[in-house]
Image (tube, rainbow, N blue to C red; front, side):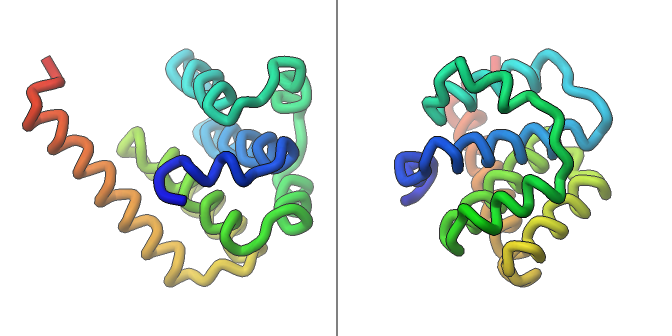
Length: 143
């Protein structure tokens, strides 16, 4: 289950939960811009979430309720993938701010993911992002 292969192991409820938590971390800076909206739409397609669930996905819900859902639905492996996805989103815009750190830490603690594991996952995410940048430069894809 490298990359995004894990998605096929998620139930529809789990996919919706992942997406709702990703939306929460994206909105931690107080605003969702047009690029982020498109990212969310693309991610919903990648997760193969039918469009009739968009109302549920976008409905207001507090973080504690989402965390309770995660505790009920996710085993450790899926929890690790969730934390990896949240870290990837938080690091993508090179602006991993204090609110996002607190967000990931709060969720990881509630899901029983050790701080050391979060640091390890974050470093792997950063390594992958750096590798992708080098790849694009080497292939001259950033014209």
